[in-house]
Length: 506
Image 1: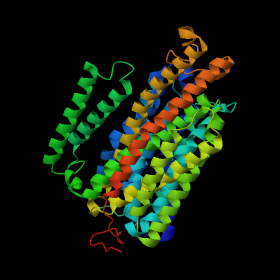
Image 2: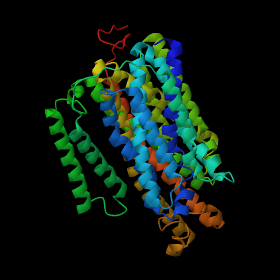
Image 3: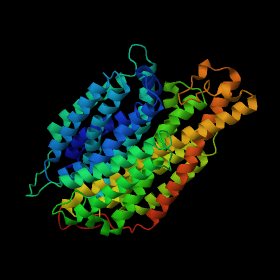
Image 4: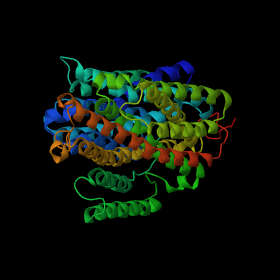
């Protein structure tokens, strides 16, 4: 494809990817009002986010495998239609259970859009030239990931709209992507006589889902060390072992285990998992910090995360352009790991009264690091595999990143609840409010209403959330440091200059 043809098709991919990521992040600042209007509790608050991440993560390997067997254009259009249907029904939800169920369906479409966008980009463009275009994907990912909460906050605070429009807003974007892709995407279809590994798809989905359900419910419904935890973790491990056994014997496995014989693919997969934890901690918990620790509105909460957006946008775009120009990519991964670790560590020092300029600088540092890591880990993987494995290899890396994000949201969310409760109890004890004030500040598991609290109690709540969210970033920093360590062992190879067989390297 020529450059103009690529840009026209890429516009459709960017629209679809923007809608997909937006659906995961736009509800962040609206969640307190959504859960309150539907009569849900703290568990519903977590599951509205985790449900989408769970189905997206579990379905991604299957979409990647289907992309190696069927028309990529038809598959991404199918995922767009699933997303549109889920979004329309989500906006009509009348109960937390209905919303969570529909968000799971929506996640199936998001999984397809996330994975297939990377795969189609790789099918159109050789690795050496892919950096300049993957930078656009990275920038779109950055804007939708961190801009979603801003858009959601504005919609929620706007009279006449309300939180239900957080789900409707992505529908016209997805429909526009459907039309653009139909008119511009032209990829050759290579048919192969193979069988889809349905057993492998079912086992990997079940194993991942059971593990994510455990990390979501542990600490709330039952103790981390309990017979329920042992049963669910043991079941997930057993299903994972059975999956490995099935894949080792399948004629055409959904995740070919031979891919992990390549050290680069193994290292990028593990690094992506760790980056996912860092990335989602920066998007989900910033909204709680600005709203509950600093008392900002949903709209202003989104505005104050702009430094993170800017850092992601600049670094993902600039690194992609320079990789195309020079053919060198590893130093971007290493630099990104250093900046991400430093950004998370510095964010771990903030409190509810930390000057915003300092917090903004720390956010920008985190954004710069994430922008250098996300797309370039996928690029390093795609450069290592044969053309027939391009789809599944791309989805494997994205799968691990989403898996890390789902685990991060669940585990760090549970830790946040515990830390906030502890800090609030300490603050109440210093005030002499005792147990009587616990329910007043949200000690019963609900989300506190800062405007309804008297001055001293409000300061206690803001201090508890400020310190608690900072602890979350501090706990995520070692994950970023480990990702940096893994990227150091990745061997840099020259980027291929062709997408088909007999690739040249430059």
